[in-house]
Amino acid sequence: MSSWILETEKLTKTLGGKAVVNDVKLQIGKGDIYGFLGPNGAGKTTTIRMLLGLAKPTHGSIRIFGKELRKERLAILRKVGSLVEYPSYYGHLSAEENLETVRRLLDVPRTRIGEVLDMVRLTSESKRPVKGFSLGMKQRLGIATALLGQPELLILDEPTNGLDPAGILEIRELIKRMPEELGVTVVVSSHLLSEMEQMATRVGIIAKGRMIFQDSIQSLQAKAPAKIRLGVSEPESAWRMLLSAGYQADWDRSRLTVNGANDHIAAAIVSSLVRHDFEVYRVEREGASLEHIFLDMTGGEGSL
Ligand SMILES: Nc1ncnc2c1ncn2[C@@H]1O[C@H](COP(=O)(O)OP(=O)(O)OP(=O)(O)O)[C@@H](O)[C@H]1O
Ligand SMILES: [Mg+2]
Image (spheres, helix red, strand yellow):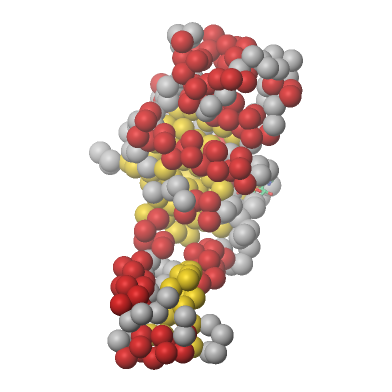
């Protein structure tokens, strides 16, 4: 028995004679927020549709909660909530009424509606017709719907697509709370690594149908060249001091940078500068390096 809550083996989907998902091995642990990343057309939605039993794999297998999806589809999917692409609603009905239509199908207690509305912070808007909702509110209602059946696994396909920064932040904060507060494992797809960095515990990167990286977010971050840029008083003498202290510092008359500075080393550098009476105005990680890694891995097709 494996310890993964969701696991695929050689998962493949051929569409129009092309393998749009090719030999994919997903491994998702209980309590993970799994960031499923890839540029447009990489195969994320196709994979997710197979995980939800909405599309049939051409080859390969899917195990969820330790059971074969092919054999125990209904028992498995009862404990999976999902939001794939743009959810559809009855626009003239309120959020509460829309949830009620789904609640009846799932046969969960009526009190559950208040709970999920509260979870996605829509309680105060729950009586308004959904047609007046912003895109962010609609996405939150979609997540509320996905949570109605108290799922153990929640699968969200690009839930922040098309949202403004405030909407993105709201969804991110909501997702981050889920494993702890609801005991749910979350799979969330995105083409933005920067977004995943702020919530995922584990990431899988897919490009042209193939999985090219899968591990903890920390091990992805460890691949990023750790370079920091410093804003300090008297940068030239700060540079000499850092060099003599053994750091890989560079000074080109406008920028003071240090290579090989992970968080721990960056903290030591700052405290050393302060001890030597330099004023530190700014410490920045150089050039969103994780995005660069992502672009490298995906052959330059990633979105930023
Ligand atoms: N019915 C189909 N017939 C042929 N090719 C298809 C079909 N549906 C999808 N594809 C192709 O499969 C590939 C993967 O599509 P998919 O929607 O899974 O990508 P995605 O990673 O979700 O992309 P996006 O970020 O744009 O949502 C794309 O190249 C797409 O053109
Ligand atoms: Mg998609």
